[in-house]
Image 1 (tube, protein in one colour):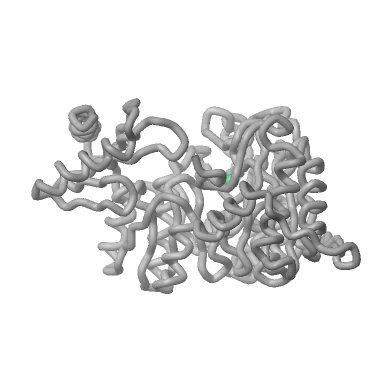
Image 2 (cartoon, protein in one colour; image 1 turned 135 degrees about the vertical axis):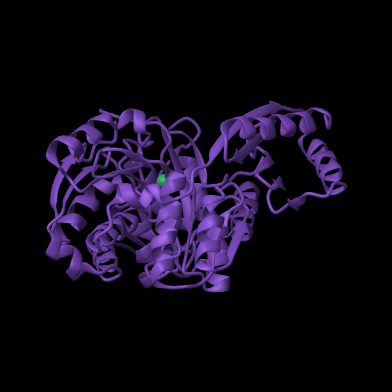
Length: 446
Ligand code: MG
């Protein structure tokens, strides 16, 4: 199994994600970089963060890199910093995973996530344990920079219509979940002239009130305060604040797929150009693209694939249906705070979030999984059967079969011996039907 998953390496802190692992990943990165260059190292608020960040710093210094310790930062803040001031980045984070987890994510020189090819090279070095050890006089220097978040906040402000937003004096309720967004989002909103009501805004790596994953069931208090305070919007972030979820002015949760499509709609109304999303995303994105008369490019699942495609075709917008939105005018990575500022710009332009959400077409989804021993074998057979039929088929990531009235995506898991089956259609019945067809197809390919 690959060392780096879809979002870096993750596991239980101090059991799997040990100081030794952090040292060795940083030494591998340093070796990969030829023992030269600057690496920015930051972390989210997890209790084990300081321990692992210190270890990563030691590893990078041992390889001869110059290290800039940027402290507690959202992942997109480290990425923004790397793009300007460093040759690579290390973020100690487990994103939305439960409290006890931690992990390491690597950032490329342009601020985007490390490419799969880069990760594979670094992985090879990690397992070979053949690290460059700098001679004593060339072990690295350590600097600290406490301005990374300020730099990041200014970057966002300059990427939206900040004057218009400021005029409106919005009221926004924020739940940063005690994660890394606690040190940026409330301050960004203040700078945008908002009255900010913050809950779970203290930095606390034990996450006393909710786990870092911002699901609607743990955000009832936020929704309540939006309603009672008459706020314009509610926003919650995951542990490393690259994703954000939103509540409209009525305190209603905006489903992430709808969030993605409504933002695409807003962006395309002002600027025409191609948009990008993974094959797992809802057809809402396709509808929005068709309506605007622009091209939609599908990619394999993973924000890095979306970001790279966006760069390649100069897309105007892209993102995943999990609350990870990418705005090229700011940077090529998921950015929850940027999405939040952009939603304020929408409201400032006179649109209610509830109305924009309702203008996005409705779809229903069904999903399940099938346990399977020979994953590659089964996927090959599924592909063979499907390609012999007349349907339009997309094999960019797993097998996606298009029908006139929906689609089914059959995708092997990267971490478990299971195949996931995900279907979408205009009615729940039809989505179930398509899902069941997918299950049958997988079962007959075992
Ligand atoms: Mg995250």
